[in-house]
Length: 93
Image 1 (spheres, rainbow, N blue to C red):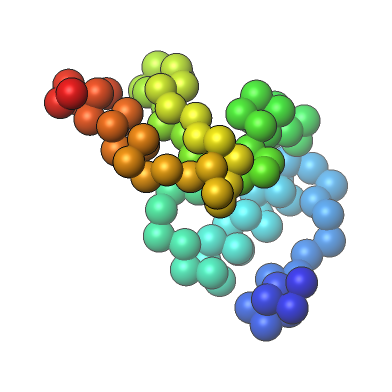
Image 2: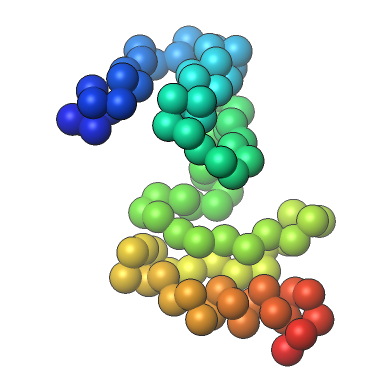
């Protein structure tokens, strides 16, 4: 929580999807996040589908098929496995 105080990203729990999107946008700007950020629906459907807790790495195809799912991180992260899945996905086995 100290990092949230330091970075001035303290928010009340959003009451609807519009508030959730606004909080996410503010966090992206204040934290200088440079990669695309997605906002889950208010029912947390994506979180439930991908079991993102504890941390995991995913490779998802354009058709939404999961091509790679790591073990829970950080100790379950094996960059060489993700690299192999990426190579296979683009046709470079």
